[in-house]
Picture 1: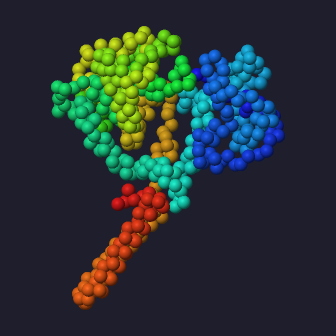
Picture 2 (picture 1 turned 45 degrees about the horizontal axis):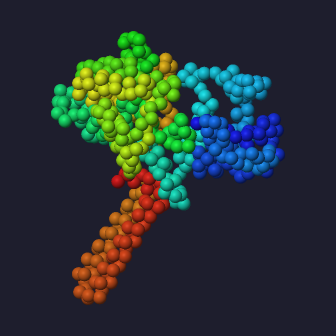
Picture 3 (picture 1 turned 45 degrees about the vertical axis):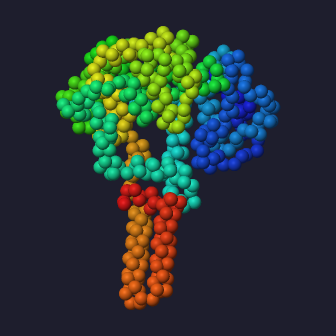
Length: 493
């Protein structure tokens, strides 16, 4: 599939660059960005899919410049974006001869790589601008008029930003999971191999957490048919960090990786000597696996078209748990796959990588295989604590040879509880308690002083009404209003 930016927008964009567009101005795009960052990011573009023969799928693509002009965004934000794009281009180059130079020539010459980065691209610059917009939206105070789905990301961010609570919880929650209890490195001398162990079962259970080690599974557009999506499988895609240094076992990156694994395990409570030996074994295992990583530069050769039913009928694939993992991943989101579901495996020569993976793992112990999954899983928990984040930064500094700037306050989700939220919450709780106490006292007094049945009935009805009203008010505040007090309830009750 080829994604092409239609000339509908680009024809008018040339006019944007030297002078303002002769088109009517639209509304303020800022508000649109706040509501839907993806829509705003692509607003000035018109995308179409092109089949392999070069024919656009959308036949209604021919428009005059005037017609296209009516559809082009001309707000200040769009003009700024067009200006940014034009600065990257080299209009002296012939796009028919040197399209890359025409589209990006000035960007190559004028961009300087900062000391703390390994690459810079126009996509990253756009992502940075979008992140600023997202940050502005997420840090806004929650208002009673906001919808529930609009508040969910803000609530999640604020819970993440409670650094004090996160540091106090630290690794406790992780260490209580079944995965931690079955990780040999953490168990130390108490760990014992199980008789019913299988890699297929291990892969399937980790897949329930949307986590895979031996292969990456995703849904993407079929590269040989842009009109449909297929399940993609890429063997060993999740273990790329050692591919830079396959020649020397004592290389800087391998040593840094081994140190990372060891220190992460020790931080979680593993014995230092046990962690050191297990980390060394895992690095050796990764090196052995990566010797068989497929060469997928030639898509035609690496493209293996198969089905889910065919995977289940292949004993090598079922031994590795590939079809079981695919099924488990989709079951986790309530999707049932048919037996003839199309699956594309990028493997060259055909099936060689997965077969080699099986051969390598057959020679390894259960401890090593469980540790392979365990270490990979813990690597996904990037910010358990500040200490864990520091260990990871040290590794990437050694790997890339640069000094990494620690994450910003926003990136680390640092949080200071708003005092107003605490006050409001305390007031609500106190009022509820006082009302309940007063009602109970009144009921007792009435029952003691008078025995009149009618009076008792009236009092009971009043009590029930008051309690219902109080409960409704609390539910409205927490569920619908989503005030700051409601956000802080999980942290203070």
